Length: 74
Image (cartoon, rainbow, N blue to C red; front, side):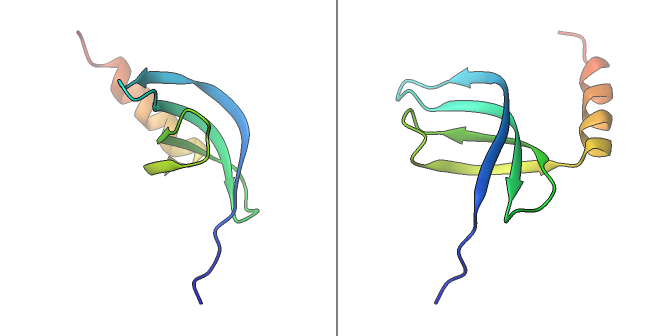
């Protein structure tokens, strides 16, 4: 029997983009398996019934990511 993974979005930070199917790539604060919330970037179905693979960050990691992104000139 597979272990169930629980996911609770504590705070929706914002939408990064949307594809033609309506799936949105979002930055959220998410608690996985009732643990401390982490910053999470992944795609979500329009009705939020499904999600894609994503990546999570601690507060320290997201701060480093922010600093790296601020160095990019576009």
